Length: 358
Ligand SMILES: NC(=O)c1ccc[n+]([C@@H]2O[C@H](COP(=O)([O-])OP(=O)(O)OC[C@H]3O[C@@H](n4cnc5c(N)ncnc54)[C@H](O)[C@@H]3O)[C@@H](O)[C@H]2O)c1
Image 1: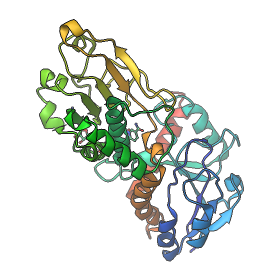
Image 2 (image 1 turned 90 degrees about the horizontal axis):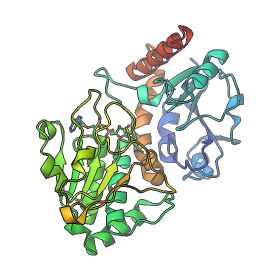
Image 3 (image 1 turned 90 degrees about the vertical axis):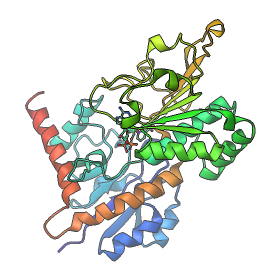
Image 4 (image 1 turned 30 degrees about the vertical axis):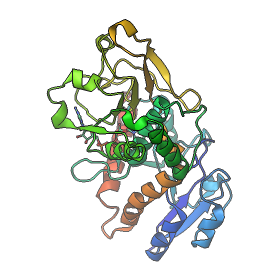
């Protein structure tokens, strides 16, 4: 049987420093009989030499277009715009199955070339739960930015950093008084909710933890009694929003919304007072000026949709630890394991919808 060939491509987005498989995990694939090729990349947080030392075969940046036909081309973010036809099996986050911007163009490229997209977002277990995600570090960074902003320690533009640097800032913020803030994490039991709690703890911020049970009868006044709300909720059914326009004129302590979920335009936006993301260049946006006569402070939002890229090393390590066991599942005797079949089905459905013209 041909060995499974995983080809780790370079990322085309120039701010993207993460890697889907870290050098320390390469031997796990090699020991299972896989072939591992890695493209050189000056921006990746791990040196190419680390991959070579771990046993990967090194090739030039962007050479996946010439990879053997049977290779799985693995990345994190979008492919470059060329070539117009894609004939490999690609594994990455394409955001191409829900009618997003460019979704149609991406699917057309696969259809034209006869390739397949195994989107990491659609790698799910038998219960439909995602098996690989960056959520923990998204929550960690989202909560950290909220605390640092409230502590007057957030400088823009943001740039990728090491966890030790971020933690030093959080600890200093705590010593300077951030430990007097009140933090609320919604979706506290999920991946990003747990990451958010860990960051708040690093600053010594007392935490209120709410998940489904605690929000069933929403206690709005209690919610507004926190300085910082870190929203990590994932819901697919429209639910009573946490903060609406009418809440802003109320007496409240709430000053910063850190929206990790970033579902800012969807029907399940839990914070409809905001409908736009923020960026590394301008991480914070003012939503309401506040009214000191009525005890309401200005309200600001942080809604950055690529938070884990700010902690590229830790985000890559956690992601690789989750992904590699599933990559091994590409070689299972009866064909790729359940999550790969689920991702393949999502792709087939998207192509069928494209062909049906919907
Ligand atoms: N901003 C970024 O850079 C970034 C990066 C990665 C992921 N994300 C997003 O972060 C979000 C969180 O992902 P996750 O991996 O933590 O999801 P998860 O499924 O692990 O957790 C979601 C949590 O929300 C809870 N929840 C659902 N409805 C609720 C309600 N009405 N009230 C309170 N809690 C409720 C669930 O019980 C669960 O604990 C996702 O939308 C994901 O796309 C953002």
